[in-house]
Image 1 (tube, helix red, strand yellow):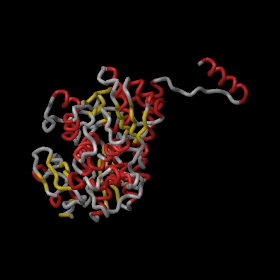
Image 2: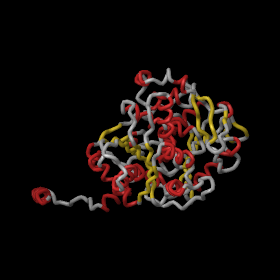
Image 3: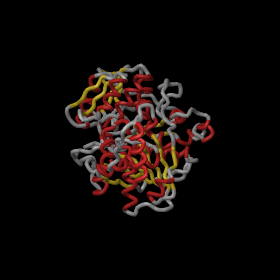
Image 4: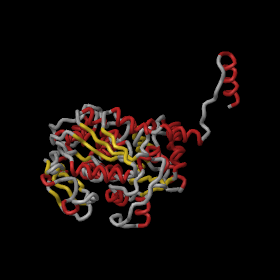
Amino acid sequence: MTTGHAVTPPFPQGPFVTHAVCQICGRTVAPNDMGYVCPDHAGDLKDEGILDLRYDYQAARSAFTPEALARGPETLWRYRSLLPLPLDAETPPLTVGWTPLYESPRLARLLGVARVLIKDETRQPTASLKDRASALAVAQAKSMGLTTVACASTGNAAAALAGMAASMDLECVIFVPASAPQAKVAQLLAFGARVFTVQGSYDDAFDLCMAACQVRPWYNRNTAYNPFMTEGKKTAAFEIAEQSGWEVPDRVFVGVGDGCIIGGLHKGFADLKALGLTTRLPRLMGVQAAGSDYLHQAWHNNEDTLTKPAIPAHTVADSISAGLPRDRLKALAAVRETHGAFIKVDDPTILHAIPTLAQNTGVFAEPAGAAALAGALTAAQAGNLSPEDTICLLITGSGLKDVASAIQACSDQNLTPTPVSVGRRGLDQVLDVLTAR
């Protein structure tokens, strides 16, 4: 499984994987030859020939039924028959997936739609959706006999990988930009990861991780290089559909940086349609920060993302900050093939959405998670939502990941505590304030 130092095929596969297809040239790659990227587009740090796994859906129908799924565990592993992992492979002991799907009548009224569903990924073991991909990553690494996993991240993917690695007794090496929130870095260190803070952008951290994985026998979890991460993230789409009685929403809003999550949603909903469990695809609405809007630009201007250069990325929503989205091909396909859209929102709108979401649903999101609501509010204000719509907001990460942004969001809306004295005087002050309201 290693040539020199770099990890090479074969990678573990599930029972129904038939092949993979290069997203650039369409080349078909057999399971035993399947590496991270298309062989025709490998060999440098870019390695942009991202693969998309394909399954024998006809054969999978007998194993992937509502009745069979209902007998499975309340984790993402209930879907393992349609994941690239042997059925007998060891998986992390942590409870990953099967996160709550709430309905919010208050947000439905605010947005002027029939129903709003909240998919709450803050409830994952390391408090973000990235646990889905990382759980699959460490299971694959363990199955391959590898001892170390690595990735570059702005924080959430790194925390997810570090936590999952700790639960599976694997070493973990992480590359983060120096700008990563300290709360996220603290998670990495607490999980025992070896952390390198790169004095540059996320893209610089990504390139350094890629170079290191070329000379070390490490499992590379990097988004849009490792095609299996899409497969882990697609389980969020499976859950949205199953928890909705196999009726998919009209639109799904999600924050987008690198593009892997929205690509995973597309893959998941497409899998379900191919299996005959659903009859349509929801319109996928990718929400980008105005300071990191590469995909919005490319979609709006119909640009070629294989030649479009990176753009500087600056946003409070660090989890969706990417100058060159690595999974841009799958992200654009997700929006175009579902007749969705990319929506651009500025940082004040994202910050405003944090307390709006919390006050209306009880879900506390980091900026990238709240971006889903910011995008829905922007779409509603533009008149792009229908009163008959059922929409789903995918809340990808917890507000506890970035408390500084939550403090800023509350300050911007004059949400501050009221100081009072102790004893009787304090009680009088409390009553005076409440009466004045």
